[in-house]
Image (tube, rainbow, N blue to C red; front, side, top):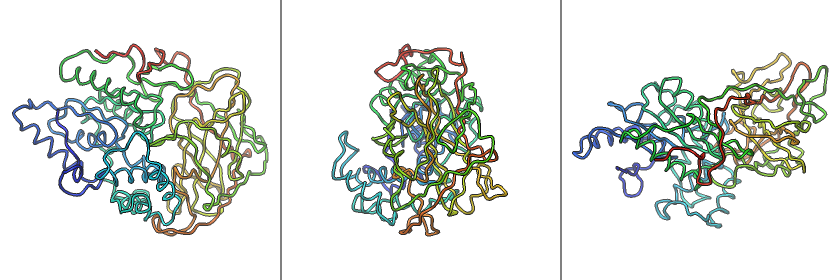
Length: 491
């Protein structure tokens, strides 16, 4: 086994500038390892999070190829975890910046967060301008944070060296991946699996009910690595079960699938002006619903896919009670509904300002009326990015915005109701849209923005839900408390 610190960390020379030197350094290290007398030329890589990124920086380019890789809780396009459809992920980026800003003096993050550091981090997220948030959080500049705020424009070429989703995927070795359904990387990792399989690569993916780096997830990664490396380096048995093993939340089972996304029936649910979510769109005219987003009092985010707790599901009552959130609710379900796959929405909207964020969240409302998030998505609207393939402008000036929500595997129980929220922000998970043309990092003032959400016959705003077809899963099984589906081969 060979472990190397990245450039500029824990005694390694040079400067640590995340995501910029791993390709160059990784290939140099691979060449050196293969020259050692104890190496027979066969090399496999494994690791999670940043150590998953270092695999993507090497594996598609290695010559001769690697034997196998296990890039867990990461994605070929790593920057998606920091910029989601144009919206900078403030909480993830600043939390990680604070961790790496302190790691050389304090070591890796502790199991119990430091309350003083947590309070400073929260205050730093609220402060403006954002370019100084790193010094507010840790008392000194952090290189990654300065890169994050300085290169936040969509398509900034600075990040080209960091992302590897453009490579010829057929050059990838067999890949084994573990991630969590509440992980910021899960959407990218599911895409990676699909693209790898389309390229003919032997790939497997385990998606558990976890936030990034939960102990159960780490145990699943370890068990999966032992099985994968034993198979590829020692001739052990191949892993059993479906290529995609997926925890079906609220069902207590694991799905074993052969492909992603699985075969589904798309279910449309339409937003109505009277607050209902219905199977049929409005048949005639209807006045739009309206709310106003104020960056001085940004719409909060509760739960969801985050890098650190709290995340996952959360009671949404505090959000849904606000006047800046549109809420529409369906009738109680007569049978369980298994949502497995890619969720999306098309919202017809007119915004007072050309710079605005559109947030769509799907929720599960239980028999007691408690609403909890299932999945959500955001689309940042800015001059230069509209029109686009996912944002079309009507003759009346109304935008038809396609919002990609995070993929999910979730059972909505009979008797529960589906609910959709529409809002102009999700703070501090995403940086608030100040509505001005000031540079992102230097902006210090904001403007309110009025939203009109249309739901008439000519503007049928709706969510599209992937309902798992009967018999699409060849196997189900109970949850293993150790972090995986029972019956998984680990010998």
